[in-house]
Image 1 (cartoon, helix red, strand yellow):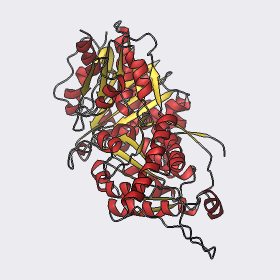
Image 2 (spheres, rainbow over the protein chains, first blue to last red):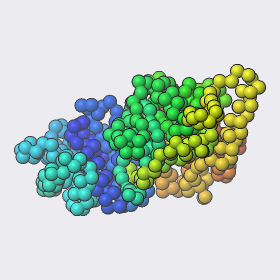
Image 3 (cartoon, rainbow over the protein chains, first blue to last red):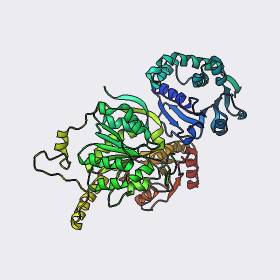
Image 4 (cartoon, chains in turn brown, cyan):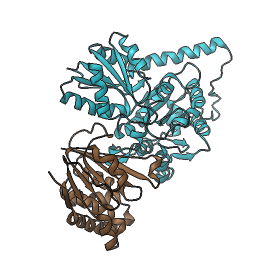
Length: 183
Length: 359
């Protein structure tokens, strides 16, 4: 099993930390993992993305241009990465702020309206965990127990009391997932 | 506490390895994409545990000269920087090599020339392997291709530096510096005691302590014949190093008709291209030089010599290709594929370059 994922959005949306939690959860399950951020000047207020690979085998390239899954959180990233999903692959996006919706017919596309839900519940900081929940609903790559351990590893101890809230947000995300185009 | 599995960035692995392998001092100045080295060291505060000194110098020039001084005292000292900062260190590295001192310097390369970009590149191959400073010296150059190797090569680097009393470079880039992967970290090793240094480093300026024996560290010798003799001694070390310490990894070369030669992050990307090419029936392998100097000439000659063609894949305009061509003595056609200025070639792009070469 190898899952090659790109997560892309605005800096500050929690793109990198979402990837980090996935990566930590992956190593808790004895998987090989790789987490490569974009670290250019575009991070400051602009777009931000991270490539996460979770695999049973030694990971070749940490840098990719084709992905099994794209998790897309703004229009710029949609423009850049919709075409980078492998045929038969998965695209998950938050429709908030998206003016040009994806048009591919050879991939599975789902929406997670995480921005709206997070602001409705007053948990905007947990936005990324709602998105992550949507992804895990389609591809349960990591178990809830491992996700818990991953959160423990990736969050500083002073934030550990927030782990249950993070887990709730993941569950909310699973419920929010809506098919947009499926094969 | 025994070995431990952690997830960390390549840059953090450099810092963590330094603390755990008994490094005495780090002197550096921040620069993207390697700032996490200093950041991690400052966060870990090893001066409170192992006693390792961590100091942010006022410049790269100061950093390398602090390293020079620490090395002269027989200490395991290091610095790290990225391309423009590494250029500033070249005078110091030449002096350290001339004074025959061990030291470790890490270059997490970014695109150049000049201030260039902050994105990954391999454009400092010439500078590092052919000598960026003046004089007939070499930097023993290690090229990690994973976060684990970033970790492992710190201790290996110190070992080689002390074995040859010569500076060692870890030549990395923004990909390997910034990527997070699994790393197996070792238990903490104690730093060398002054008594140990006194006993094992008879060249180290540790203070003669009324023994009457002066140890003078210098790279200056005004008599040409004496300077030639020093050069002879240094060159003899380099021949020994070429003989004993050239390292490489050969991947799927046994049945290959074509081979990539690539190091560091380019080698990782080529591993994916090998996978893609083989799925299409193209028998290609990969030679990954682990030491760039000494270059694994014998291995490239032997494995490369069996191939129809060789593709040197580098994140530069074609630098290592010269060593590849020398190794196979132009008996096999060698071509180059590269992106530069901070652009990373994709696995598919490299596959396309291979297909063009095979045609």
